[in-house]
Image (cartoon, rainbow, N blue to C red; front, side, top):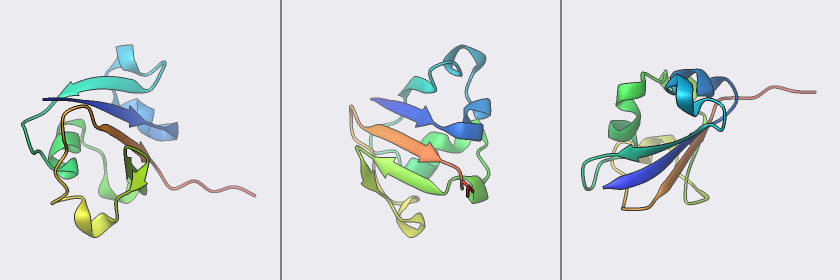
Amino acid sequence: MRITLKLYATLTDYLPPAARHDNILALDVEAGASIEAAIAPFGLPPRLTHLVLVNGVFVPPGERGTRALREGDVLAIWPPIAGG
């Protein structure tokens, strides 16, 4: 099944070079794949996957290993961001 993966800020470095410009990647994953399974091939450090949204809805860290993705889902991930 196909989902859309969006990585923001410094996480774009984990995308293939062709996808880094717009931070979006169409991604084929197994039906019912969890969020963790979908992003595993990218090697994202868990400490950098701070804010995770599926279709604009926050997914808490404890649910990322069990939350099943569906066809057409948009998975967006942000690292921790500091500012002032």
